[in-house]
Image (tube, rainbow over all chains, first blue to last red; front, side, top):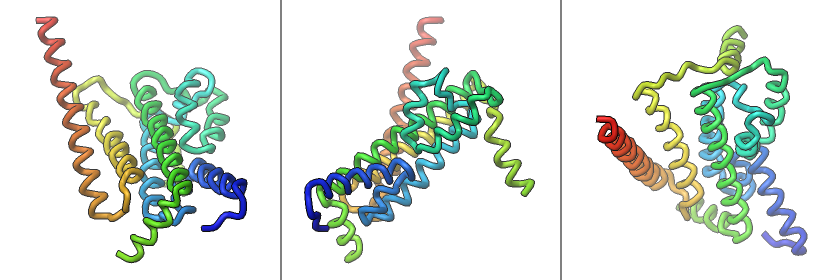
Length: 138
Length: 82
């Protein structure tokens, strides 16, 4: 893809990164890597949901567990909505289920960070487009 | 609709997790997720067959090291307490 200016190119990288944050795997979809995007979306969503299932939505706590919350926020900005729901203190999670839930959800976030970096790097180097064509020809 | 509500409700209460050896099984889905995402981002060309094979190998290596760590730590505790 030809970019008119450097600013356009930087904006494209930012859009790819933002898409990968809003929807896990979204960045890979934008750079013509739908197979990678699907695998990332399914894996990160399932890991995050499993964490919520084990520990309940109470594991999202921006006050008591702010360090975990930072990792959880990288998974998707929708975590902010869940945090708003749990602020009332209705959904409490403690002990081992809470620990496991926090680990699962935060690791899902960190894995999404890896995916975002991967998508942005592929967009930067143009690798995604080339490999996409190789896949098509195979 | 009641089924949907039941599914949503299951996310509002924590699941009981004991301190038995069986609870260690919960590490495997996480290891699998790590192996899948790592290989998805790392493979130069994405082909399903290669992807699955590489993921299984990495998952096996990760699981093997985790089990080894569990055995070694248990041995250390057993030696210290016996």
